[in-house]
Length: 96
Image 1 (tube, rainbow, N blue to C red):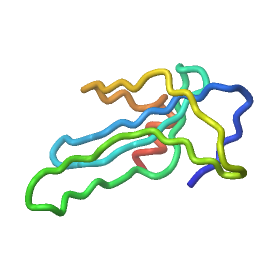
Image 2 (cartoon, rainbow, N blue to C red):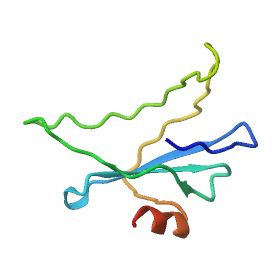
Image 3 (cartoon, one colour):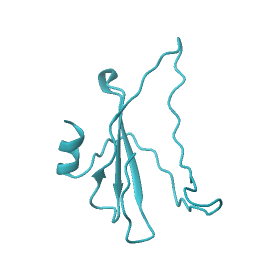
Image 4 (cartoon, rainbow, N blue to C red):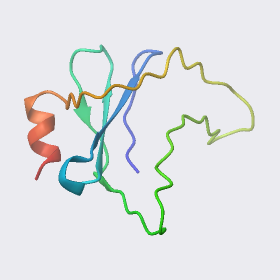
């Protein structure tokens, strides 16, 4: 788990999935401006242990950490075939 202080009200989240040659890894990024993406957390090594493909599911949740209640507003959820990565520094950091 990582904690990133936010100065504004908006944060953009991105997950890049690499399925080439059975790499099966997810890389996580966040951005405060939609231009500079910063790697966050560790890459997730996806594993498939069932005898048939079930797939990974993606979702966004709001978890109250100090008091019950509150809300979060997700404007869109988009899926693309293109792996975009972060900026050069973030991409290099993720691939170590």
